[in-house]
Length: 331
Image 1 (tube, rainbow, N blue to C red):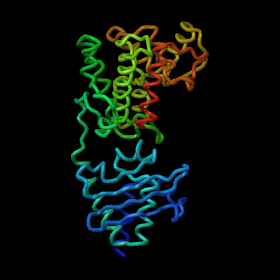
Image 2: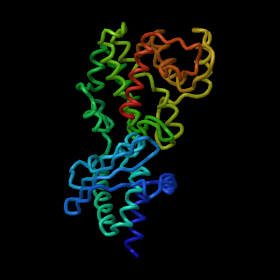
Image 3: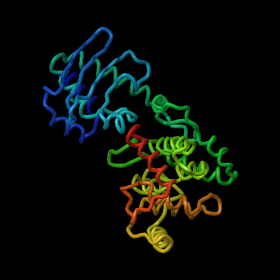
């Protein structure tokens, strides 16, 4: 009886109320276990989700890297749960099914995973001063090129010391925030930093290709700037993160009026306006021109909220880099 209570307590720690509610909708027969190696703690299974093809779920408790103990390919786990060491509904359902088949093994396996996560969490204190490496170290293994850190890009764009310090201060705050709220891409602490660094790397790579006639410096800086609006908004929403770059509604209204007057666009996009407001505050320090202005306005491509949609080549490049980061790498 005590073990059953402990099992549920560990599950609660590794999930949340929403995940547990979603688990109830998954039938037991959606979980198929192909291999169980109790001696080595290895399991191979699959779980039928909403997709045509089932999701794989492989466990290997002998892996030293905690992130590799669970190999699961559902988007929710990859984008949000994995980096936060949490279970998605599929992994949780698997453990409930395994519990009915072999309770002792399921409980011991769950305890071992929980123990590894606790040790990892103690080690995984984010270094706010490190602006050259991803918070999620797995990202570097997903890339087909050697990624660069922000110091490289600061040198490449020949930033003055004042501009470097300004950007460093902003980027350090991004290390405390997710890339998106409500469970979208990069939904972990530091996800916003990873997203900006990843988009900047892709923008840099794309700007060197023959497909785009874009100045490399502008591509890199626009990529760094493009989500600054999230830092302002998310620090307001999170309450637990302090930022000096929060903007107020009056500033947003001024930016909105400027966009309408300057470019003759209609619509409203607070996320974009917040990014522009941050840059306007630092206009005496940061390089920013009309081409970059338009690129930030339309970096969401067809989902942009200002219209008519008027994407220059820089906007097209930033949008592509942004989509690769969020849709391919879930960051």
